[in-house]
Length: 170
Ligand SMILES: [Fe+2]
Image 1 (cartoon, protein in one colour):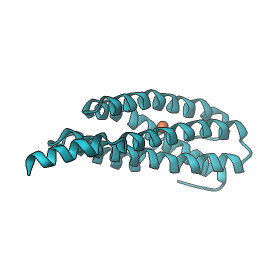
Image 2 (cartoon, rainbow, N blue to C red; image 1 turned 45 degrees about the vertical axis):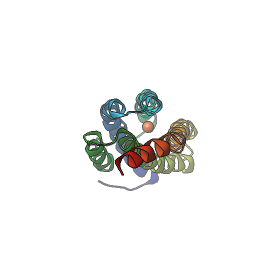
Image 3 (cartoon, rainbow, N blue to C red; image 1 turned 30 degrees about the horizontal axis):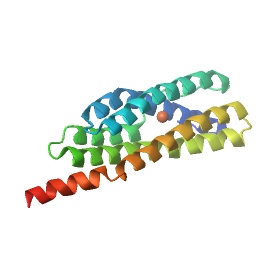
């Protein structure tokens, strides 16, 4: 890899994000199917639709950059999704598993928020206003998805459910 300019860095970030979104589109249906809570499953399925839109936005902005976007594999997302697969395959209490799925999904969201935050700032510095705007739209949706996961996790459902199970076991 050669990085000679901020535009090279932006192109690299876009290539990395494209791979990240592609991997997430493959993984999210499995994560959603593993969710016990209807609310969590619906949130994950909704984010799958949004994620398809995120990939489309990256594909649409690529030809407007005026440089080549490298083909790459986002190793960070790959690692996060491998960890997520372990939770999908886990046995045990369904509510505990949902809590773990939320944790894994939020790691993914925070990773994307970091990457989109960098990319939109680079686009802003480069005066690529349209690109910045598109990246901001996705960044907002990632942040909203993250907040919704927190809301589901702290809605009281898990706490009461897990504690009830624990009391039944003791
Ligand atoms: Fe996304």
